[in-house]
Amino acid sequence: MLRIFKTASPEALEEIAEEMRLRKTRHFLLLFSMGSQFDHLIVQKLARLGVFAVVADPSTITADDVKKAAPSGIILSGGPASVYNEPPPFDNAIFDLGIPTLGVCLGFQMWAKHVGAPVTPHEKREFGVHTFTQRGNDPLFAGIPEKSQVLETHGDAIEESAALTNLGSTDNAPVAAGRHKHLWGVQFHPEVSDTEEGTRMYENFVVHICGIEERFPSESVSAQKIAELKKEIAGKKVLIALSGGSDSSVVAYLLKEAHRGTEGKIKGVYIRGIDRPDDEAYVKKYFGSEDWIELEIADATDRFLKALAGKSAMRDKRLAMRGVYTEVLEERIKAWGADFVAQGTLYTDLRESGLGHATGARVAEIKVHHNTGITFSVPEIAPLADQVKDTGRALGREIGVPEDLLIRHPFPGPGLVVRIEGEVNEETLRVARAADGIYIEELRAANLYNTVWQAGATLTHSMHTESKGDGAGLGRVLALWAVWSVNGFTARAAELPHDFLEKVARRITNEVREVGAVVYRISDKPPATIEWG
Ligand code: XMP
Image (tube, rainbow, N blue to C red; front, top):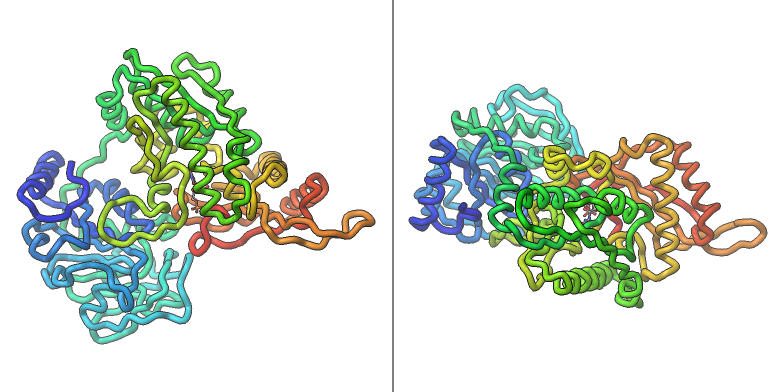
């Protein structure tokens, strides 16, 4: 199947035509991926609406290519570039073809500049959830209340001008949505769950603006994935890195289904060393005595400590962690004679590491995830690489992964490494592990664990004066955080009851000698990320 549309070659056009025949539709949308963290969510939204979308490379596709392909509509995603000081690669003649186009954030700014509307750096950057007030009765907002919540993440603003019709604003964006003839644009992200009416906006664009009537139901994703895996790994030996969390557990169960009725073997490896208090127990409980998977616990504590010694920059620590992780898995691959290695890598991991849809648009590297950018001596399988957290969990539910594993909070592969500022050593690991243990234990005891998407404790580098007993001294500042989210692409700081936080803080400062004070982080994502490092 065609993955990225880079030029209108006869082969590429035939592949699009073939897909349309399969889906019994005359329509498709062209999605120019401008490098946004969220562009994959657009693909998923459109897939759920039953619309075939082809991801196009803005650095290679010309207006001529678009004319040949003849899509029913065009979407331009957001991205890290800025239209006035580093315009992204794009053939602006595409805007003059008369094809209905929706520009999201950067995509909106690109066409606005092209039609002569001023785009300026704004004094107030807009990150987070804002109230959008729509104006007029544009079909893009049909059936949507006058005011609704939207997620914005941009520094540039589009000014009011005669070049476009203003379709609505937020407190900091005078033109949060606009239209010029066949070009529509929004400064916010309708693809993220924080934008309440986002699905309706895409549906309006697809149905009312692009006139796409035939939509096709999406097939059962798990059945399709199992069938694809079956073809690839039938009868083979697959080694899987298990963490006790939902993603790798879902992959293990997909492998189990793909191997059903064959001679294939699955071996799970759990790597000990920088993990949190209860991870190993979960892996042992659910995979330790199953007949379809053999479990090995690999203790890499000393190797992690050696690789991390003397390193304090988060990126260096992430790379050191990734090095040991790769080595340990590679040794197990060789010793067992594995044919494949499997990981629970999600689309979020790839995207934040600067990977994802391989177009020529610049993509920001936010952090190096532990499971990306590495190679093994055998082919790698990552069946969840096109999924995000919530869709991965839904897939797990379809194939019987125990709910207890699925509802565990997500946690980073690099474990406590990203939750310790400064050097990771035996002592800082012990302190971070103890604090995390208390926090999670109390969240469960207060029945709050399932009310938040993820929670963690970060051992910061800041020192706080303390007055414990008679002696005065300095103790580390420990930061607690918890977020509400759907898929980890965006998150809101969770409001936890004050008396609960007080109880946790008291326990931590009493029971963990090195901690002098406890704080609670209240930033959303964006602008912050969920993990500290
Ligand atoms: P951030 O901190 O980037 O995290 O907002 C989004 C989600 O991803 C998790 N995370 C990771 N997961 N390997 C992983 O498997 C990693 O290197 C990694 N870094 C962050 C994070 O816990 C959150 O749920």
